[in-house]
Image 1 (cartoon, helix red, strand yellow):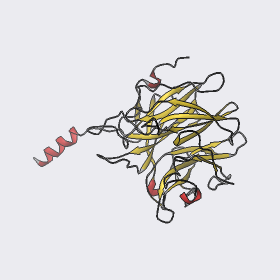
Image 2 (cartoon, rainbow, N blue to C red; image 1 turned 60 degrees about the horizontal axis):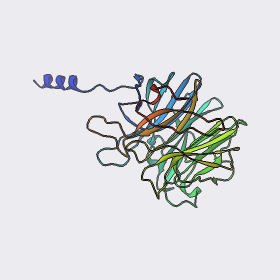
Image 3 (cartoon, rainbow, N blue to C red; image 1 turned 135 degrees about the vertical axis):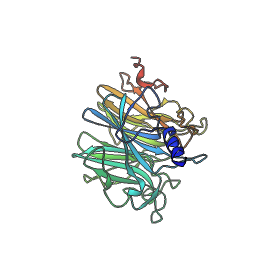
Image 4 (cartoon, one colour; image 1 turned 180 degrees about the horizontal axis):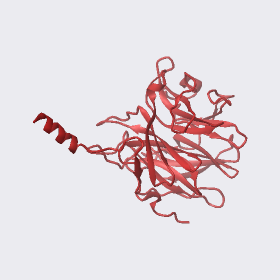
Length: 329
């Protein structure tokens, strides 16, 4: 009887996708088997890779994030689940919080930058860097210590200002990293990708909260970020600035999107893939079993991103349909 009951339970248990499985997206959110956040796209050849944080908050927890997941696609419709590509415990000097990340390709290798909580030797949030020979990993700690720690930005107002790295390689081969919460910083990286080269500069745009993303189109540089006008809004939106140089001066253009539904946070990730530009975000509309979306249980989405003739961005209306509906030209 016991064996029979165990078999019955096994049959009744839901089957969840496993690493290597295929997922077909039918709108937003993109993935329904796990809570995902802070999307960071990377295009390699004819495939787009999407690095995300894994929200595992239970009940009233705000955040519980211990690993980074990876999905990839050839058409933004059918996705391959690559599972966890790295855990925060892989950085031996970090004690927790696998927060926002971004991966880029440089000189044939793949560099993964991520926000974590440093141990007591350098209290506060820090930015780690890992490396792999493939976009799917395995990734290993490239430095053995933090790239950026809280004491490197002493003018900041709190211990979690050094989060949300975005990394961008310019046409001359120079790689830059920007990051921050409340204050936005930028610095050049050395060619070895594991050291800062020169001063750290503050470039905080209006209403900057966190989640910066750097990209370039033509001769124009874009700094897109999660914004919060604390005098009028409760939840983050996405705003952006542009510049003729990666070092500025930056011109503020206002809001690109509204807030993510049911979500206090939002996090832009931008990529051009097979002729279209895409804006990846997250909201909190997904429910899995008896767990509803919340501040610590978010879900990744995608929308088309379009440009005006002068290089400014057309406002993005977030939707359940996402890119299943062709963009209005």
